[in-house]
Length: 539
Image 1 (cartoon, one colour):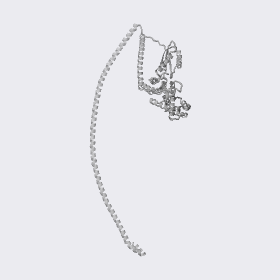
Image 2 (cartoon, helix red, strand yellow; image 1 turned 90 degrees about the vertical axis):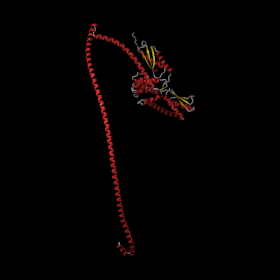
Image 3 (spheres, helix red, strand yellow; image 1 turned 30 degrees about the vertical axis):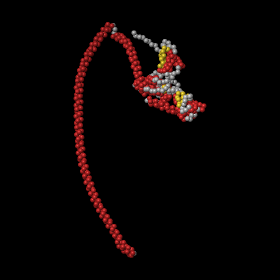
Image 4 (tube, one colour; image 1 turned 180 degrees about the horizontal axis):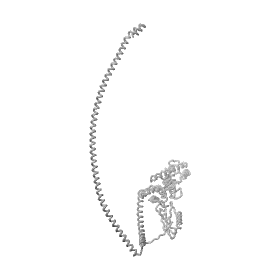
């Protein structure tokens, strides 16, 4: 630095003076900085030593605390260990006591069983001795019997020889005469027993049938409301009648043409009567007319549109009614077309009785009676439900509802029992199974219930009397019986006046006369019976 000062002084005297004044100050500053650095280092070193001492003291206290905690944990562990050992010893002691008690009980039970077995063995030994004694006695008796049989055979042989000598007949001849006499006596007794058994069987079967039928009727009680061939549609006011008729009657003609139902508009206040024998068409007309009244726009084009919508609604109602019928009766697996035909029966009546309700009741009755007899309940319900299925389309197809129903059942692969039940439920064919007989009985029960059908007692009796009168009007007829509510007549002819060849011709003549003179639903079966009896009395 002095060398630098001398060099600057040589250069400039003024600068030399300034430097001489500033140099002591700079030197003092530098000296202060150096002293501060030295003091800082000493302070840092002193702080480090203090902190080190504090850390060592803290570490020492932590180690002491650690040793104290470890010592306490050890003491507690020893205490816990002693407690667990004591509890384990107590548990082992209790288990040993329980085990010893159980072993003692088992030993006592084993001892009891051994004593019981010993007693049984002693009893068996005594019984075996008794059996052996009896067996020896039986052997002795067998030997005695064998000796006696030998003696008896010798005596019988001697007697037979003596009888043959006295009667001058051989043993075979006498045996044949004896058997012949016994056969005649037994034949008479057999006939008497058969008659007794037959009478008893009839009485028991009649009582059993009445019990089954009464049980079925008690479990199935339905209410019926007689159906009619007319429907009444209420009007908001009498002015609506004119709008329904339309200008020059074009509205009413369009409605009658599209629905096939007659509209009767008379003096009845605020009402229009729909008349028709087809209940489905009548229902379509009713729904369409009610919609037209609500809509207010009544003209031929609108009538045609509403009638189409009403037909779709009725089809949906028919489908729903068929499904409900199968669900209500518990009959499943029917062909969809049969289900639809069942729905059509909702709008079909027979003597005022709703056919769908009748079919449901027949199904329930068949199920109850089949359960009482141990027959197939599901098959009986199925046959009862579809037995009148032909009535759904008998307006559209020629033939009786029995024939139509049987054809439908065959077409849709129904079981043979169901087909026979349909064909036999009015006696058109003979029943081939119990299910068919049950359907016949259930159909008669449902139709004969008071209030089920609208036909009056007077007209019913008159129809039966007319049938019997027609048959009795022919020569050679001895007696006539109307059966099955007039669906069948059985005619007894005199065998001396009518031969076998004339029976067929006479049955045909009676059928023709019935067709000409009477009106009746369905068909009537005519059966002619000719028999010759030989009767004698034993006195």
